[in-house]
Length: 226
Image 1 (cartoon, rainbow, N blue to C red):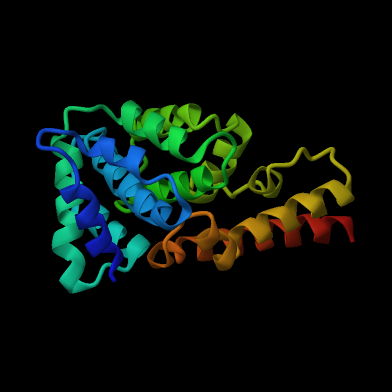
Image 2 (image 1 turned 30 degrees about the vertical axis):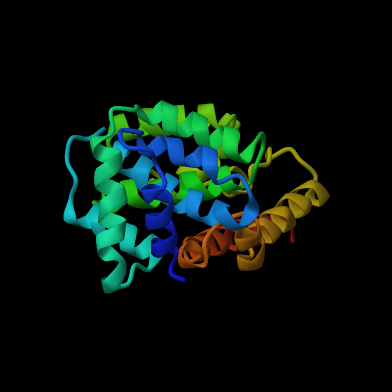
């Protein structure tokens, strides 16, 4: 069964008049978390699109890149996007419900924020309001400022990504600590690990760039130590 069919079923289960954000309270078991993840990225992406006041064709394309949406499933994805955009519930309520769903310190929050950064940068610009939006989402997820900055550094091309920031380590840390951080990020970014924590197979492609950036950062640091 397509994940979009499962999402449609979840939406149909909502009582008339309930906001889309209510769906997260019904998706607590692991098999359904992939549905929650997909709805979360699309719903928060729809809310974020309002932050810079414009939904571009590039942003719509970015959704397809994150989820590999097949032509027959585009209507279902568009329905989720439009429901979220029209929903009176604010993005903070969505983020809070997602936080209740996954609990504290869950790796999926990084997956979600990375998906949102991918969408926000689809038009080649990072609007200040998008930064405010994403910082607030990360705050609700109880993501550390350092972890948020590590993600931002990989997506926003203000400067050459600092390898220590990418790995989330202090430059004064020992090589053993840096190696441990690198290996932990590699484990978290493995497709099997992502699927196990609720990221749908359709969205695992977002990890490809992350793995490249993580390994490049480690190679840079390791090369300096050689």
